[in-house]
Length: 242
Image (tube, rainbow, N blue to C red; front, side):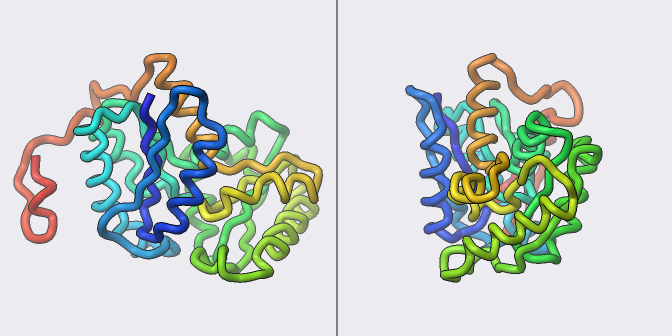
């Protein structure tokens, strides 16, 4: 089985971390390929960043289809381009927010999301509503550390852990969802410190895609998620025509 993990930003060090986290949970015989697009933002922290990350993401989906990839993970908590990716892919495609929220809903009556910058909280709430997670998502909190500073700030783990502690106390939640792929390696240390389940969407999505492929399941392609109609694209998007 070949699963492709696409980090929609172009920061290779983050992609390497994401790949390591995905491989740590993938089953025997599963090849995990982690990539960044050739074009896009260095990090995704706004609607503008998210919109401009999608063409590079879809280019990687198209490459995966040509290489026979079985399933895909979109490793950004905004789940950018998820619907469009499902139109292109022959196998299942999951976003990490989608996977993490569903996994956390199995572990108690409610969870809190701890993300990076406060300006991204609205997107997390929007996704919770889209995925039917309103009754489980009890709060969305920001640690106010920029994505690219997660590996640069020596106090990052301490600050994120404290934000998780505050979220648990304030929301009365049973667990934490980490709201950034750049936090993928922090689950064990935060869970040990706080004594609650901490869910990383990269690991959760990898195992869910693996399970869907094993079950022979994919996105239904008879209606909304059918392949896009052939048409001409111009300018910078000329190569995206079908």
